[in-house]
Length: 178
Image (cartoon, rainbow, N blue to C red; front, side, top):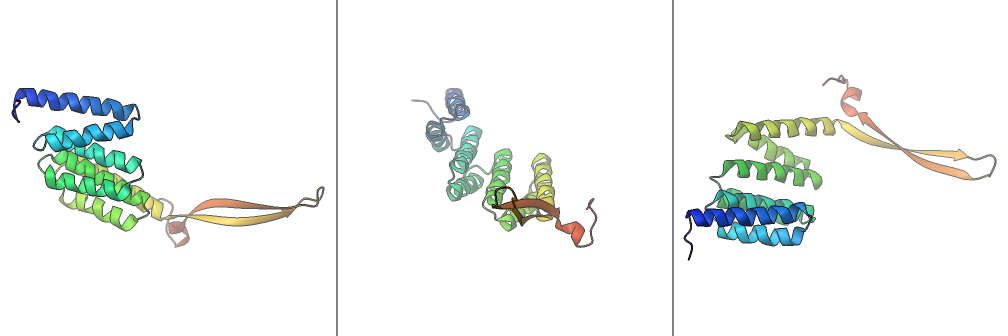
């Protein structure tokens, strides 16, 4: 029997992680998910378990299971808190999920917490960049205009929807550089 923490266990965890990542890269998401879950449950005090937990959340998100993905990623902070890079990456991914769910307030709160409290500069920098993108997106608005034309040759009425993106910040008196 292999004991936790032994070099053999570490090698087995690494092998399981490699197999799961290959399945993920080959888009065999269900198989990869099973492998990552098994590893996450075995490697409870190992960085490979934290990485597996991250991938579980990522796959659930890719499968459209957004609430489950958020729950899984939040559990990473509870179960693998000492592996800060994976905790940080999980919260960056959570912010992406919130954005995908059109919950910009939640995404912004998550990112602002990372900027304010997270100890790793690389994660903080990524959170700051995402906040800047959110700021730019909030100042853009898609405007639809219905254009109706009459075709003289065929006698048909042609209706077309034109979409345009405007910077609402400029209209409010701001400049385009803001």
